[in-house]
Structures are given as structure tokens and as C-alpha cells.
Amino acid sequence: MRLVIWLVLLFIVAVVAALTLGNNDGLASFYWAGWRVDISLNLFLLLLVASCFALVTAIQAVEALTTLPKRAREWRLSQRERSAQLALREALVELFGARFSRAQKAAQKALNIQSATPELAADQSFMALAHLLAAASAHRLQDRRHRDEQLTRALELARRAGGARAQEDGARLLAAEWALDDRDATRALSVLGELAPGVARRTQALRLRLQASRLAQQPLDALRTARLLAKHQAFSKVAAQGLLRSLAFEALDGARDVDQLRSIWHQLDPADRRDPLVAARAAQCAGQLGAPDDGRGWLRPFFDDLAEVQSDERAALANALVPVLAGCGPDWLQRLESAQSRFPRERSLAYALGHALAERQLWGKARLMLETVAEDTAMPSSARRRSWLALASLSEQEGDESRRARCYEAAARLP
Image (tube, rainbow, N blue to C red; front, side, top):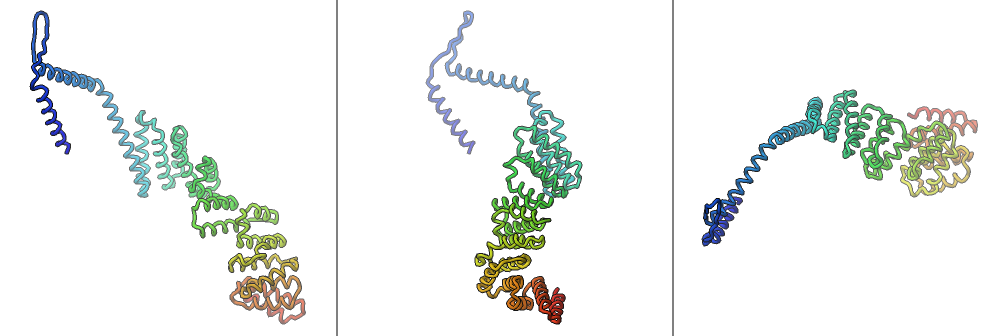
């Protein structure tokens, strides 16, 4: 197609030249020291064009000769730059291909080429990236000393380069990830703390902070980080709920006294305190630490409206209420009787009601409820055992030694 266009243009030029120059009878006269030369105007124009072309060609030839050393240097520089780029790409491919020794050698080759060329050594972003690839390869090879050296060098170059902020952020994220691989939570948290606020809110940074907080046994910090990840939709809804619950459980289980438990409870997010399973775990911890009033207070909002929770959550609330029934008032009997009448098929509510009746010394009703729960094989073994022990205590108060022995024997047989 290009050849056809050139042929058409050539024909057009020929036609125009024939029309304009064919009938041109003009002359060009030149005088020099008494001599006169007459040539046709067409020839003069052709000679003028040819002279201009020759002059331009000569100028370009002279310029090409004078700039030859410079162009040779530029060519050698481009060849070195191309070699360095090829070595860097080779290092990246080898790293992805899990050939870490080759990746390290290729990255070092790229660094050597850059360092040996002053013009290329000024590209600090390239150098920082090559050092990062070498550090990543050394990490995979368990060469921590070489990895830390390369990482430090990459951070220095990234800080020195004005537009290499991305390399610095990437280096810090990689350093935090490698610290977690080394099970060094303190170092990982320290590196993450040096990130800029915008980078620290990225999903990858939050994931690393979550892992570091869990590794450092800081469940409250991990819980706050996990909630941010859940807002960023980093997990599915079900996975996020399970993770938040497990972290809240870890925080509550870590309490060593009542004051610490109260502090942890108030530090929880309101959404966590509205979770029935989290409140049930908090009540169980309160019962173990000898604070039944706090446990009942945390469970009261859920028992005031049990229809809003699922059946498994009602069971967890009822099981958590039993250890904190000591000193409960008659208002709890009303709540539990109302719940039992509303959900008559849920044995967990009968279990809680039986122990509440026993706590209020209403022995007849308590015995009926506790026997029903103790003989129900669908109930958890811990609930049945506690019910048998409560029945044994009632029998002991009544002086019925044989019944008391049977209750203890039934409790001992449970797995």
C-alpha cells in the first residue's frame, strides 16, 4: 500500500513539473569578470535544489562524524541498560518459578551492571527493586543475614529517591511479612508502625497487623484490626463473624481478675457486646472469677428479649447463666419462667430455670426441672453433671443418702 502511494505521488510530481516547466522559456544570467553565462531557468532551479540537498547532506555527514563518539557511548549505555533490565526480569521470573538461587544471582547481576555504570547507578528506583528481589530470594533460602542487608540497602535507596515511595512501602510490607515468617511479632508490629497512615489502612497491611497482633497475644488489638478488615470486606460475612467472636473469646479468656475482665468488656466494640455468644463467654469468665453480678448484668439484655436470638444462642446464654446464678433475685425467676413457657422444648432453658429455682430454695420445682435435664442424653455432659450434682446436694439437705449416692454415681459415669 505504501508503494502505491509513493507511485501516485511520483506521477503527480511528474505531471506538475511537465505542466509548469515544459513551457518555461526563462533564462538565468550570471556575470563574473566580464564573462556572462546564460542557462535556462529550469536548469538553474534543478541545480539550486541539488546544491541545497548536497549542502544539507554534507552538514549531516559532518555532524555524524563529530557526534560519533557520543553516539557510541549512548549505544553502549543502552546496551548495558538493556542487559540490566533483562537480568532484572530474569530474577523476577526465577523468583516466581521458585528457583531462588538463580533469582538471587540474576538480581545481583543486574546490580553489578548498574553499579559499574555511573549513568545507570543514578536510577535508584531500579536499584531498590533489584535489592528487594535479592532480599526476597535470600528469605526463601533462609539466609536471614543477607536478606536483612539487602532489605536495608533497598530502604536506603528508596528513601533517597524522590519518587520511590512505592518501593519503600513495598519493602516495609515485605519486611513485616518476613518477620511474621520468623515468628517475630515485635519486629513485625514495629515495621508496620513505620508505615504512612494511608498505607497502614491498606488491606494487606491490616492482614499483617492482624497476624502480628495474634502472634503477640494482643487479642484486643487484633479484634480492632479484624473489624477494620471486615468493614473493608476482606472476609466473607460468616468468616468475619467467626473471626471476631474467636478474638473476643481470646480477649475475655485472658482476663486474670475481675477488674481486668470488666476493662476488657468495656473495651469491646458495641457490636461485640451485642453478640449473644460473646456475652455468654464473658458471663462464664465472670463466674470463674467470682463476679456473678457482672455476669448476670451482661446477660440481662438478652433474656429480656430472647425471641431476637437463635436457638443455639439461647442455649449458650442459658448455659452461661447457670454459673452466675448465685445471689440472683426473684426477677430472674420471672424471666426464666417466661422464657421456659415461650420455648418449652428447649432443655437449656429448663436447665437454667432448675438451677435458679434451686438457688431460691424452691426444692420441689427445682427437682423436677433438674431431673428432666439430667436424664436427657441430648444435653451436654457438663450440664447433666451439674444437674446431678445439684440433685445430690438437694438429697443431702433432705437427708436421703441413697438418692444422694445415686446422683453422685450418675454424675461420675458421665464422660
